[in-house]
Length: 63
Image (cartoon, rainbow, N blue to C red; front, side):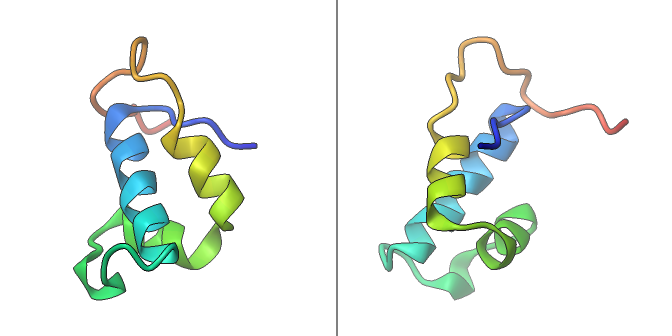
């Protein structure tokens, strides 16, 4: 299962997960959360959103 690489990625996964569950409108999603909503399962999103924030950087470096 995927783990978030940054706090921003974790937040995007959380937003996409909320939309998948019908807790918010898909039209409210922006940026990476739209791509995550369309390409990841609810289980994958839940795993990524639940990653511990403690050691995550604010944003991920693009390699």
